[in-house]
Image (tube, rainbow, N blue to C red; front, top):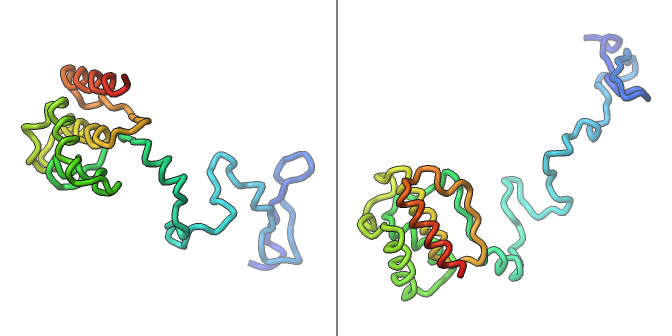
Amino acid sequence: ASRESKRDYSRNNTGQHSSQTDSSSTRSSYNSKAYRNPSKKQAPDHNDHDEQGNRKRPRSEKEKNLRRRIAYVQQRPYLFNFSVMQNMELGLKLRGIDKNVWAKRTGDVAEKLNLSALQHKRAHDLSGGEIQKVAIARALVLEPEVLILDEPFTHLDKEAKRDIETLINDMAE
């Protein structure tokens, strides 16, 4: 295409798009900021992530402490193909909690959620409701101050819903 056939799409002073023939440039000229979607979250101005999106700088102690007080259970939780107990212990391990505490915390929560019979079962062998219960148990063993649940009762039967509601209410008191 020749230079004369290139079009410059820009906004005129009424906010409407207009096109003009651009004989001086081979590129369309428009202000890219005008087309940026304001509802999309933009990356922070400071460069604290690498090209793959990983954090370059370590989290501050304040940020670490805040994050450790919160637990989140997704609507469709992901379990690693470990046993039920290993999935429940994972958060404790990652947070550096003493191994002597693991058995008591996981045992108590597993008993209250009727997961004791499943403790050696692999995650990929569980039903949807069982996966949901294990994900909730994994969050509860951390004893968070704030528990965020995204549709936690999606795949659960009435008895399981009642057990989890009771456990959460007991922890809140």
